[in-house]
Length: 138
Image (cartoon, rainbow, N blue to C red; front, side):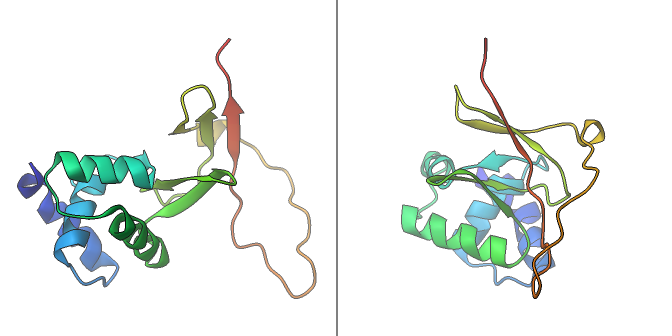
């Protein structure tokens, strides 16, 4: 399964100047190999790797996700103090967090309007603005 997806994963790593280790290529293939953006947790990626017979530990998944974020390939979205999602779509866009299911999805950017942000304190600048809209089903 991973063999068909590794070319795109390898190119993705190369675009950020990351060395294509076996584990990185396997995880990159799962993240972007099919060309679709996704929001994943480390646990989801680990389970997908196990299903694909990729020999990686959960610690390797966490370390690799951090390396991908540091390289600008992923964005980490924290929805509460203990749960992070990793987004392959690096454009600025809001998210829906479905509290009932624990799922993070993209929200329509064209429907969001932020009129004004508060000024950053002296000696600081705004690096980014994350918008997570929490939803519950009726």
